[in-house]
Image (cartoon, rainbow, N blue to C red; front, side):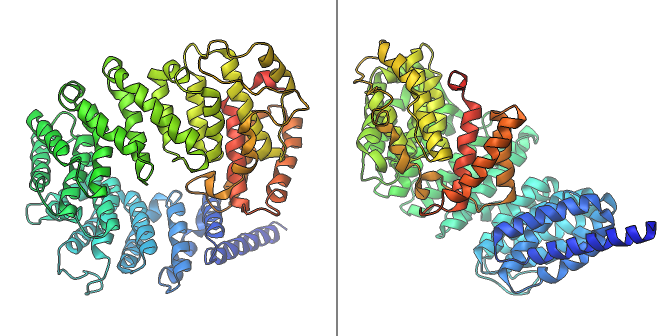
Length: 579
């Protein structure tokens, strides 16, 4: 009888494995993701399946079908977390060369995911696989050199520089000793080629080179001082050589190198280099190329943070005016970077130096949000969030705050909105009714998302009517109506604007099992007793499906909105509204 039960159990496990491996070949990334996680859980419970899994993943690894290859990447990224110590060495030695070959693809997605997968394998390898990892690090470095062929396929390929940069970043993160030794070896010019790649004509190559440089600089932060300074000087010299270049790519590359250095060389960058960098920024701030201007805007807060006293004394006034002008031009599609930079400066620059310019900053924030309505750039909310710590009371007494709060919701219900509102509510000395007014706006939005209806919260509306916002100046009437009146204030346009897939977030995922788990987790935080949790869970899960009918919103978007709404309920203190 026991033997029969064991055979039945073995059959069920085999059938489960068959289904998981079949689903990994699905063309739906969400199905692949769920299957990869299931494979991880299966191996955790049945380590004896390791050899079979390793063998059966070999076939799709060599597949010519893109979706099958991507499925293998997801699986490997998962199972490396549960591979037994005795299986590590053969697994890495077998799969690292196979995944590495996929880097020679001309498909950018495959290259990107393959590099991440190589990183997972390098991390797993440890000291036991140093020789294998070292071989592939050096192969990557060969790809950086013009004219070099692929060590593995014996031929060149279109995206080899891009692939090399991506995979070297992974090696810097997960095989740091091997990567550092190879990149800094005197026998090759790897670092020089990385810096050259930062001015590559292709945007994706420049971005990859910048990320690799940052990973490398982080890698050397804890090295000996003499080693750090030697490498920093080598890198700085490359940037300085292009300070006066008339080639836009070279000039842009020099600023990117400087940005990376400022982030990772706090104590090792000489003061004369800092002055030289700032002077160069000032010289090029009115450059005709928009990419150069944008890069200078983004670089300015890092310059301010690196040496506040010198920056304030010599450069602050001129660069603040430049960024304000940059952010205030409606025709500038990149003005969001200007608002983010202003937000950072509000936190970095001493109040006595920053305060004279705050009136102008408040004005362009007000114009962007209130006049921009549904077209305002979402980064202005980052600026609001960062400015509230030092200038909260000044802000809410300088702008028509009631109108401003309503207009904020036009952008749709998203994390940036929630973060900005949280900071506004936490302004020291803010009137309690002012805080409650924000809570009501949030609750109206959340009620629309969870129930498809808007509530007036009539009891609190009447309290606000009896005791309006006495301490808030320049505020128009609060539009507080009776329970039977039209929905309170214009903020309830969230009814339509929040339920708009385009505005929900920048990167919505496909619906996955983990989304449903997140919904349950958020509900658990809000409703502590099981009965309330059970009732609400049933309503929410039904709403996920029902609310998408007749709208442009996908189920994935709806799930993400519900998770954010529930997280907001759990993060804010709505206890006074519990009934």
